[in-house]
Image 1: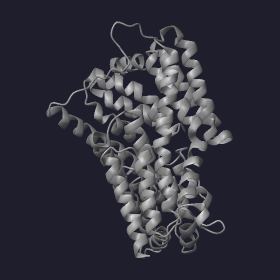
Image 2 (image 1 turned 180 degrees about the vertical axis):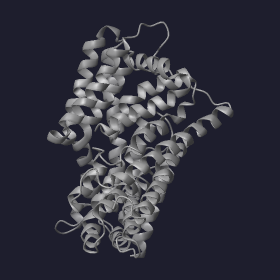
Image 3 (image 1 turned 60 degrees about the vertical axis):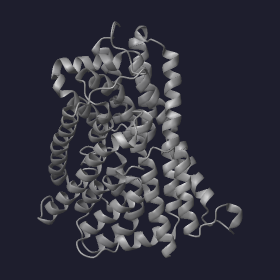
Image 4 (image 1 turned 90 degrees about the horizontal axis):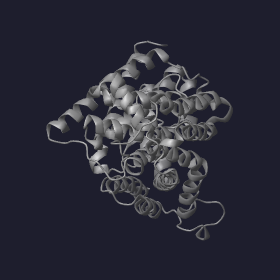
Length: 440
């Protein structure tokens, strides 16, 4: 058992370290998973075990393949949508309109609000990053802001004050309903207070980090692949923003009937409407499609590689013992639940994964104790969005590397501050407020 714990902790630490160093995740993720398997005495190949026991190869590849099967259409259409937004000039048109209305100093605010509206409207976090990135590049360029902060800006608007708030259609807010018998609006009074804290504090912190970098001489770094904005005719801002609105409306209205498949319809509607409305402004539509397809393959490959690591980690005896220990933490059930879900989410690199593993154990136990289910729902939801955003998280890897073409060394620290530290503080505030009787 000691070796299993060494393998689990060592494998995770090594994965985080190598991710920060910028090594290829398709190589390092399975190697780190192999370390976990060897030290946990998990057979490497299916042929080395009898029956249906866990093996390194089977668990890794099943988790890898299942993620690709579930999400590839959304990744593909999301990447294509982002590319055609840039190639058509629609992203630049919207950004110029936003700058004209809000002013150049509010470029970051515009990106955060765009991400927040799409996330709260039910659009997948991955798709939000793909969709808003072209506009973010254009806004950062016009405002001359250091582009290494684009991933942090996208993440702040997507996975902090919106993803885990009451009423959010994101899966992280819906998983507890099945186990606690609550609603998406559980603990809404506390949720509003925490969301306001996260939004205001996070925006101030992000602006402070950017201002400090600018004071140190950092500025926007142009790249050859950036959409050209000079000496080209741009589409009407209204026709440029309509496709984004279509994605939001279709995703929201079809969410209950089609669940995540609604994103396929929504993104397809966005791509088609963008082409119909702005087809004469495209510079090279076929190239945009090709680049979007390639980008989707890279993004989902990197993400699935990390998901595969989680599939092996969950099969280890150390992981099983860790879950049992964390779900039996004495003291306030809200504190125990928050710690258990957040740590498991960190180990698996997934907020939803942390909830799905912990809730079947936590929910019956705490409900029998008389814990308020709405308070438990909101606490667990907020806390799940903290340690899940460690460097190996799939969304983090996809946003930094595949979408923004940055390195963890340059971009992660600002993102980590906003998506790990802030939600931890938010979870503590929620527990305090519930303990004082608010919303119960």
